[in-house]
Image 1: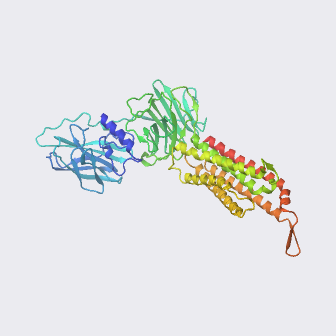
Image 2: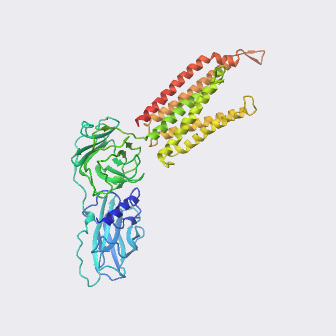
Image 3: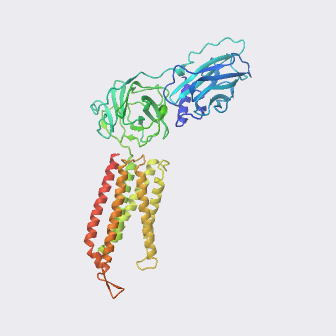
Length: 591
């Protein structure tokens, strides 16, 4: 392909959307006529182009037919037969607007024809109108897409000429687009081995130190062999596995490699990652000695790549340090890959795979997101829950004990709640720092999180205007204080339920849901137990003189009598909360 074609091809790929051009809007591919589907074009065309004449004069109409086995997409142009890399010439008129549409390539209006949808077609008919400044010889070209990965580029059609002009000499590069860039593919006979990891080859394993032959191990290794690297990748995936070299821990501008299961055959290709969009697969493949295997629930592929590839734009030099991504996901018919269902594994630092052999792991959750989750669990599983229990049930028990001139229960409650506000505020900021703004991919979680943050700030502000104990508005304050706090706690639990399964954290499922349900049941059960205990104390009465009720024990003395029970319950409750908290923190650390 000529240099201008390469430039346009890169631009096409950067512009293309997730699944190529199902609607036929392929104006960006006017020069290269190459679809952004990745892989290499087929060599032997199955489709033919025919015309109803061999000569033309400016203004004449030439009937053009494209026919063959069922195909989904097409792209037809007419070009100077002696300069097939030149812009399209002439314009077209449609014969069937249901299956074809006109496109403008360059400065020539209606100079190309493409499909309107990916519905099956066998025959397309259009009319070409010769321009006033037409070249002496014009040749029709077509790109045909049978399936996503099965396509032919610049199929050569008939040449039509102006009268009394000698036949053209075919250009030597006329079929350069269809030249094969694939290499022979072999098959892997057994699972990969980790025996040389950290000694002879650089390895990444998830979980750490897992066996590449197990059905739960993601494995990636690099072994230097003179001026090239031999790369192995495997994991439990029925769709695709992919890894990428990146200069930061964000997707975008990365050098990617994909192994995709296409109808029980694995296609290995290179790609370029542009932000959070679909990988832009390369038309040319820089990989050698490609092998693959599908067995025992594992997808395996291996290949060789030169450390430096100056002739391939977008391929990084591998003698430099990079962050390394490892991802998996689903692939549909034809090898079309879908977004990974969970966060990719990312190394914790920059690594040079041609340097000292290492055996490392990685994390599927960014550190800031881990910190966000950990701080929220500390705040809403421990400090706020214990603070609520103390305020609700320990006023009579600790009302005569003072701390810094205030009742003990109040000081403990206030300290725990201010800690909750501090932890929640710090945690609230971290996702915005990580994302650089608002996340459009987190569903309702950020909206509920903002509501929780607002209520968390509102609670201490409202407490600062608390009326005195016997003021008329004290009962109204108590009701607002309780309702605001209860609403914040309920929303916080719902927000944590939603956040645990987001791709950026994605705690083990369904374990995380059961653990959170267990915590809610633990808190509600403790609350109900203490409520029943308080009720039983109040009911210690004796009825005398018919309807008169005399309390044998004052409420204060009755509560004091139950002090030991409440302290035991509180101790067990705090220990249980810490168990839930540590469990969640361990899970966060392991993702």
